[in-house]
Structure formats: structure tokens, C-alpha cells
Image (cartoon, rainbow, N blue to C red; front, side):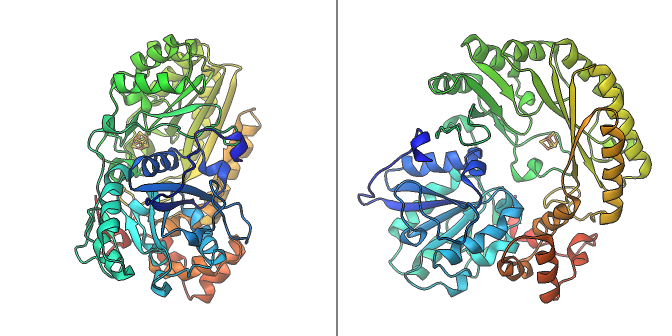
Length: 494
Ligand code: SF4
């Protein structure tokens, strides 16, 4: 892999603290994660630390670092970057195959300190908390300097280090942290620390583009979305800062991918796209807001080489869109699609959700009708839709909502797939059964840790059997959580 990669940092520790960055999924998946690039850049930029990467390719062999082929156990500090719940299953495997006790409580004096951070950990670390010595609640730029300083200055014993770590703002050390809930920390001004691709490889999904982070957080407030609170407050990089970073990026790749939860909400997004286009680069945006969507932005994007766009109506009926706080009418959606069509785009991808609280058969019928209307407006060009089952997430308005019964959800997705495929719409649906597992992990508590650790292979049958063995009823996690009942993520304050 390294022979096809540029940007790799290879250095001798020379008195620096060696940190193992572990992404609990494959190189291909991990290298498309901008958070991983940022962690690597930061840890290699500080005077007192250096970092090497580990990925998990699915075997039971011990993982070794990409940079020096060192075993995981050789690193005194291990930092897991966890951004997807279904990757939880890989964490115990990586530890066990490396000869490291899976549970923090079983680690001895000479075992590494293992911390975890990332979107899942910030929202609800409980199901995997027993695997880690420390949990990082917040953004790397705000967490790492304090962590490295106390680990350098703390006494030599494991307990002294953990006690010191528990005093660093944003860190939760199970069993030691007393001041709960732990307050999340974040970077106040994004311009202080650029965030973009630093490792270049063709062996990843976004390997053809220079990913450039435009914003964190989002002010829209959709009821199902964690971004509002977990990544609050909404922050943007300045136009000058972004153009300068894009100029640097063009030394590597001629395609700039603007990344963020809602890039088009940047107050100067049109100038940004135009500015990058003027540099001769191709530009793409992860997802366009349906409203507002200006003709100028579409024209700039088209001139910058984009030929397809992605947008998210989320639901088919106005009633349900209002219920999820997505305030846009069918007419406004169709007007935006008409603009996309007239601007010359040939590909359109629309994201929807199924199984939302309050959804009825008529909402599903409305989704079908809306997609067909979109198809009419978009013309004979390529329209594809992606339908994801609703997963209730911590720190959202829907955090206590239940998950729809599997049979009903499958029936609704089956209806949409057959009706729309027959009309030549490309339909992709995500697995309802795996979404239920994701929902359990997303809102789970520490009782799930042994279940996660016990799975030889993450299969649905294995998961159900493991729950049964542990005496856990999945409905305890998938049903409505009554108001007033404590939540596993009450240990975090955003
Ligand atoms: S779904 Fe998109 S627009 Fe809505 S809050 Fe989340 S990031 Fe913002």
C-alpha cells in the first residue's frame, strides 16, 4: 500500500511518544475518513509525538503498522478512531489478536494505554467503553495537546497516567472520572487548524480528490440528525483559508472535494466554488441543500466539472418532512431539481429515510409519487435514490423513539424498490436488519460489550445468538425509551 501512497510520515521516535492510530476497518474505508487524516497530521506535527497507522482487513492475524511494520503492542499509546457503530465488532478482535487484553480492567502495568475518539464515541461510548482506558469526548485539535502534555508529565505508573488523563478537559476515564457528565471540547475557530487530505493514495473511494473540510456542525436542526448537537456549534472556515488550502491541494490532485454536513450553507459557497474553478480545478460537493439552491451555484459547479449532484429530501410527504423539521414543500423540491436539470447535470442522487417515527403507508406512497415527479422533472437523465432505515441516535430530538418492526420496514422498502425499479429509477436500500443492530449499538449501554466481544464473526445469526446467551432482549434497546429514564449518554454533556 505504501508504495502507492504519498504524504506518509516515517520517523524514528527520537524521544517522541509513539502513538498507534487504529481505524477499525480496512485501509480502503479508513483512508476516505478525513478525521483519520487530521489525527495523523496533528500527531506527527507536535514536537513530542509521532504516529503510525493500523487498519483491520478482516483476518485474525495481528495487525501491524503501515509505517514501520511494528506490532500494536509495541506502542505505549493507542488511539482508536471510531466513526461507525458496526465497526465496534472489530475492536476486540484487533486487541485480542495483538495480545492485548480486550477489557481495560484486565490490562497490566506494561500494557498500552488505549483511548478512543470519533463521532460514535462523542455521542455514546457506553457499549464499547469497557474496552478502553480513556474516552475522548470532542474534537482532536482541542483534545490532543492536553492529553500529550499530561502523559509526558505524569508519573510512570499506569494508574498515575490514567489519573492525570482524567483531569484533562474532554477525557472520560471509566472508574476514575468523577466529574460527570464530561463536557465535550471543540475547536472554536476552524481557521486555526486546516483540515484536508494529507495522505494521497488511489486505493480509497475518494482517492481521486483532495478532500477539504468546509464546516463543522449544522444549524438546520433536523430531528433525526446528530450533527446539530454532537458537532455544535455550526462553524465555517473562511473563504481565504479555504482557497489557500485548495491551492495547496492542487499541487497533488486536480479535483477538490468540499466536505461538510451541509457545504452549501457556507455563506460564500458560490465564491468558493468559483475561486477554485478559476484555479483550473474540478470541484464537487458532498451534498447540496435543496433550499436555498441558487442558479449561480449550480452554474459554478457545472463549469467546475461536476456532472452529478446529491440532495436529501428525506421523506415523501410534507407532513412527515415537517415532523422531522425539514421545512421544504414538494414544489420547492421539484423547483430545485428543475434548476439542477436546466444547469446541465446528468446525474442526480436523492437520499430518503424509511421507518421514521409517525410514518404511515400513505407517507411511503407519497415517497414513490415524489420520486416519480422528480424523475419527470429531471428528464431522461440518471436518477438514483438511496433509502436508509431510520436509526434513532443519541442527542437528537428522536433519541427516545422506537425502531419500526422489521417485517413492516422490509415490506415498505420492498414496495418502493419494486415500484420504482419498474420505472427505471435506480434504488438502493440499506439493510433493515443491520440497521436494527446499528440502532442497538447507537443507543446501547455497557451490557452490550460482552456481546460485541463474543462474536467470532459479525453475522446477524451470531448477533441474535449472542444476545440470547447474554439474556438480552433486543426490544429493550429498540423500543421507545420512556421520558425520565436515564440514558447511557447522560455521562456526556454537549
Ligand atoms: S440532516 Fe443535514 S441539514 Fe439536517 S441537521 Fe443534519 S446535516 Fe444539517
